[in-house]
Image (cartoon, rainbow, N blue to C red; front, top):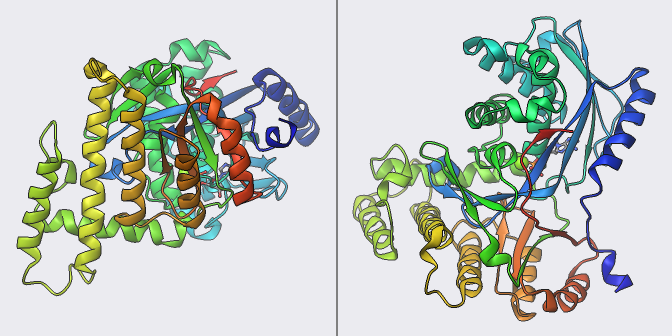
Length: 445
Ligand code: ADP
Ligand code: MG
């Protein structure tokens, strides 16, 4: 087993990581950290590229995530350092007037925007919610360590945002003063977590400029241990669903392909714009409304027929290829049908389904085909990982995250894992495997 052990990426021991991080914080900033906050990465059973269409997503939090050690400042500055070797460029200082959307141009592309964006978004939230009001002179020193692949489709960006927002909440607001250290965890209500998730979305959309729709931040702040979070993006309500029926006898594995995605280079935005053009042609504000509450394949066919009728006389759609817009539309619609089906399966409608793992596996694989052929966001290594997993006996496998790089989620029986890891090692030396153990949401350590 020694050779295959090397490909597993362990989440590490939180207490050990925390004490190491706190020591390094002392060395870096010459003073003690006031606390450490953690937010998890996520996997997703289904629901890619549909959060911004108000579709349903089925994420679960990983044990892997991002740790932020921090101490407050009183000069409004942020000083930040990441220990990720590929991004570490020493301490970055963000001046108070460089925090927020207006400052985006100067710092474009630097990871510190995710953190400064979150401080801005928390200030905005505090304007309407006194207990979350950030002191005007508040600033902080932060040291960041992640056990996630960065840019690997497992949502390291949201993990960074969500761990940071808890740090800022704890150190800079009346709510944090009243609920010091781990008291924060019990004091945070479901409603608070929902509001904090939406503040993190604002940071990523308005400051970083990424096209996130809320799936990642909701997973990081609102997941439950042992559960899949069924997230209805019409109103961001959540239903935690038991996943025991899948994990009895099977395991979920995230295969990080080692190809970091580049969502900001416009590809993701192009796909989204195609789907939005199709939505507009259908006369809808949000695509989820094209389908009934419990949609079936026939409903998808009807919407596609309507699209064909409306686009018949057109050369292009807002300058976009009609055929491409139709494929994005078909991905979003079938993805919504798969999500609703999974939601009902995991809600107990599985009674009488003899092979629930194989049913869910088939949904995963159908999701991959849709990501590959309709959303057109897959890539060679991901397709090879899916094919290899299925050939090694996996129940199902699919690309998760935004695509153009990232990770594949595999549902497989433990007995088949050694052969799978050996086969994956032959595809690429950069492949890493993460055990997907549905874990807790963001918290203070
Ligand atoms: P994903 O969220 O799938 O990992 P993204 O492209 O959305 O990929 O986010 C990756 C970006 O988030 C990185 O390029 C970096 O800017 C920021 N980031 C994430 N984790 C860290 C970290 N530990 N340290 C510094 N920056 C990070
Ligand atoms: Mg991300």
